[in-house]
Every structure is written in C-alpha cells, then in structure tokens.
Length: 445
Length: 170
Image (cartoon, one colour):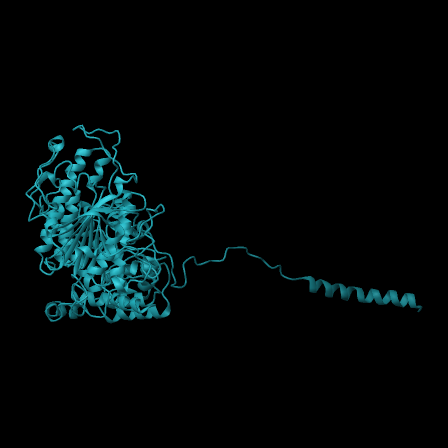
C-alpha cells in the first residue's frame, strides 16, 4: 500500500466520534477554513493561476459553421460577441429564452476560433474521452470500459499535494450510457482511488430517486458512535481489495454525510416544485440546461476545484437541423448562466477559469433527412469539417487575456487537460509521456 | 497298530476339534455398511472474499436480506439506474440501505429475540449477511458489544454489517 493509499484509506475508517465531529463542524470551519471543503491544509501555493476550473464539454457535435462563423446568425449570444439575429430560415423553430445574463464570455476571455479535434473517430464517447484524458483514442473504444489513459480527475487528485478528496472533483454528465466510466481509468497507478464524484442528475433527481433515497433512517449521534464501533469490528476483519478501491471512488467519511444531505435536499426541493422553472425559461428548459443547473448546485454547495459538465442536446442534428440550432442556443444560454453562477459564488468568484469546447464537429455535407423547416440534417463521420471546433478560455482580468480572438488554426483537444493542470498547478508533477498536448499559454497573462 | 491305522485314527480325532475351531472363527457378525452423503458446508469458511457484487446482485441481495423476499423486477430496474447515476457506490449503497431500513415492512429480528440468545443472533447474522460463520474472535467481540450495551439493536447491527466492506463481496 503506497503512501497515497495509506493517506486516503485512513480517511475511510472514521477516527472521530460523531460527537466530536459535530463540535468540529461548529468550530472547525472557522478555525481551519482550508480543510473543508477544498481538502487543503494550507493556502494554495503561488504556482496556480486560479484555484478552480470548470470545464464545460459543449458537446453533441457542433460545427464551427453554425457556432463561431455564425452562418445562421449569432446562435450563441451568451458566448460570442455580435448581435446578428437568427437566420429567417430557422427563426420560427427557435424557442423563446430569457435574456442572456451578463456580457458575452468571448469578451471575458480568449477564443480559439479554429481549434481541432485532430485525431480519432468523431464519436461522442471518443471525443469525451479525449477531452477528459488529454489523449486521442485512435482505436475503437469499448463503451463498457473506463478509458485506458488517466483522466484529468486522476491527474488532479494524484498529483496534488496533499491528495485532494473526491468532493473537490466532480463529473456531471447529462446521460448514463458509457459516460459513468469516464470517472477514472484503468491506467496502472491511477484508477478509482483518484476518480471524481460522478453524478447523473436527471436520473437521480426523479420520483424513483425520491422514493429510494429521500426517506432514510436517521441515526442519532449516540447511535452513530455505536455504528462506528461495529463497523470497525467488521471492517478490521476483512481484507479489502485496495488495489481497485473496491471498484468505486469513495468520499471521505466527513464529506459523505454532506453529500448525502445535499442529494436528499435536491430530491426534496424537486418534489416541492422548486425546480420546475428555475431559470424562468418555462417549457424551453431542456435536459442540457437542467444538467448545467445541477452543476451549479454542486458549485454552490461544494465549491469544487475541478468540475466537468457536459451537454449533448445538439446531437439531434442527425435528424433535425433546426432543432440542433435551437439546442445550440439553449446550450449557449446554459453556459452563460453557469458563468454568472460561478461569479456569484463566494470562493469561486474571480478565482475560476471556465473552459468551453465541443468534443468534435459535424460533417460538411448533410444527410438526406429534411426537417419541417426545409433544413437538411448532418452527421459526424470524421470528415475534415467534423474535426473543426472552437475553444474558449474565460477568466478574471489579470489572469486571462480578455477579448482575444485567435482566428488561425491553433490548439487541439488534447491541449485542454495540460491547460487545466497548468491552471491548478500540477502540470509539472505529471510523469513525462502521459500528456502529449500543450498548455494553451496564449490564454494567460 | 500299523502307521496307516494310526494316522487315520489321529485325523478322525482331530477332525472335529479343528472343524469346531474353524466354525467358531468363521462366525462373525456381519458388518452393516451404511452408504450416505457426508454433510459438506457450502459457505466460505474464511473471510477472503474476492468477487465484488455487481449492481444487480448488491441491490437484490440487500432487498432480500431486509424484506425477506425477492425484489420485483421493475423495482430492481429502477434502483439499478439510481445506483448507476452516482459514482461513489459506498455512498449510494449507504443511502439505499438507510432508506430500506426506514420502510415499515422491513423484516428484522426484534431486540427481545436478539437478547434472549445473543450467540445465536450473532451466528445467524453472520450467516445471513456474510454467508459464513463468525470466527471465535468476531463472535466473542460482537456478543460482548451487544451484552455490554443495551442500546445496540438488531437494526444497528444489520446496518453496520450491510454497509461494511465485506457485504459488498462474496
């Protein structure tokens, strides 16, 4: 058992009684503000650019043609400068949305207008895997298995000192399917011990979730002490397989209670109807927007140092181009709202870098499906256009170059993980050869 | 008396005693062989379990252990999706079990039954939840805990066992 494992596993066996924990929660949060929630014992060192990174996988397959080149008008007014109205050929198919909050994100950061998903199949899981691991997947991926190369979550947790708890790293996915397995990899020396907290809100915060999770037996402090003692008896007798962390990430005992309380509260809030129209978007609120909404709840509660959230509603473009444009507008609104939330969250405001990038694009030529507005649908089958994407790095003035628009072909998908590592100060700790991409230094002052 | 007559008389004289000796030696009680199957314990005797329960296995077994019946298929499907929707399986299992324990139809031994025969309760709890008998130290320690603390209930014991590391394996 290596040192890291010892440090982490020691947290799984509660050493403090529930009574002591209650007292510490009352007094400790003030006395030792850097133990919870960030997991740090000391203030961040000077080699970080910021203490938080939020990476929004603006995914589902988005063409630069409709996004940064605005051929159908500015469908992304929250992200992109410019007031070009939506093209009349699709305008009737657009749902009403509230006004986008704040100024455009482009004006608050650096836009790589011609970024590339340079290698590997243009499939959603391949693209997600590349963005999260910083490695292209040149072979077919098994969607039932974790990626072979370490994820950004593992790099962050393993190569930070001290090792951070999972409550500091979150992966908020819009759907189940293969995406839970992007939590951690099978790379030797990494794995579940360093994975992120994965959550799929639209499955969890439902009637089924309410009935299965929201009415737990609540144990008193006295009962909690007895449980701790009993579990020590049972766990001390058992040789837990620490090699794979028993097939799961594991939150520290102190934070598990907080997360359980958070999950329960979200379920009860949803039951009470508080989440029926949280952004005032009415029936325009789609799955992508809800996924970002719950990512905001996690940000407000845990202020994680690393959070990755995705959206994929635009993939409707396989059969409906106009709806693709509609969902692109909604995804844009969601990102703008996300940035507003970050900037309004104490502990995250002015100390967060937001990175936004699609996982890949779509083909130049359409397929044969025509939507009700006469627009042809588009697939993504690895042609040159499907490799054209953008990347936006947003952050506070003084840290990120503001209003910079790089129009030449610059940067690629595998550069995002090194950039995140650079921002959070652990790039130099990652062993040579694991990351082939570079830091997007053009973004930073 | 010539030799032939002598030999013939000797044989005759010895024949009956020898015959009697042989008959006595040959008379033994017939051994009755009973053929049957020896009882074999099918549970693991040691605590080195290496196979992690799958999602479906964990939920199904936990449900059966607490409600005494097989989980309905549609319930299993719904709970499986919830289980998959969160990455910390220890945490989601904890929440599921706490929720099951709070059900009005959960089936646990009552406190009086437990305290009327603590050694039997301990043995049965290990057999039910860990699929093995406790070793001497485990049995002694758990019995001691229960005996010395009247506030330890079957519910606390079951919860602690079902959220322990061993319960996740078989």
